[in-house]
Length: 319
Image 1 (cartoon, one colour):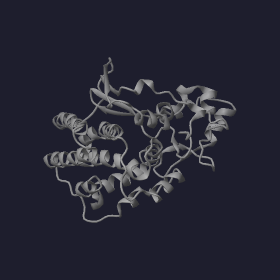
Image 2 (image 1 turned 90 degrees about the vertical axis):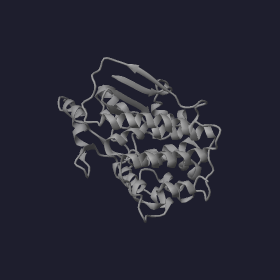
Image 3 (image 1 turned 135 degrees about the vertical axis):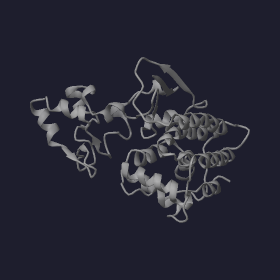
Image 4 (image 1 turned 90 degrees about the horizontal axis):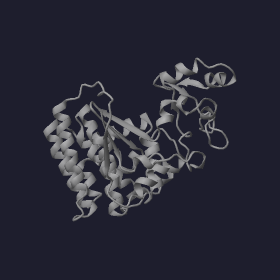
């Protein structure tokens, strides 16, 4: 299998108890089947403690119920994980072992990266001095089972390379590059399938008021948004856009919706431009949106259906 990662991926290190916004608070953690099976083999007080905090969310997933302070029940006063300490990291839930990494499998290729939802990862991406680059390795793992449309996949793979080139064109301002990216995405979508961009929708800034609240600080960010976008340095904007293209563009092979993925890259740059010109703002947005099924599904629907997020409307934020 071919493994693709951002060049900085290998340098990531969790800072555990020193983290300014622990990944063990604010959201519920799913307990995967493999971990649950192991927990049933345990005995003693810690086994009882695990069983006492298991529950189910509104989708029927088994979760660890949060404390009244919205903290994981295993997060101690030093912001360290009691489960990690008691039974080892390898037996913590899959989500905990892998966060903030994300994985996209495309048959014989696996793309992995780090999410803005982690403050450390957000700082790393924001502070890159050079354009975001990628490393490729090949291992002996077999391809994942899939029903991917190979023709569409390779079309998208080539198109993403073009999208990277558009964003990397330093002869143009970042706003011009993003407008060109929207035009490219629109033309590409027209060649893949129909796409209705909607006729009505809530105002642009209201879309960022998520129904599932994770951090009150994000509410204040949205409330105090700028009236005009103030874009970060061009290199920062370029790397933010490339991050979103890398993470989401090829997933259009599963739903045929490539234009929404392009819009995500554009909106990704607009987030710090309107809500706060720093990596912390992107961290808050990502934790609030990308890691909430409720918020993310709503966000994807707004990208596609809300006229205020049409390609034309987004261009008005860039000119």
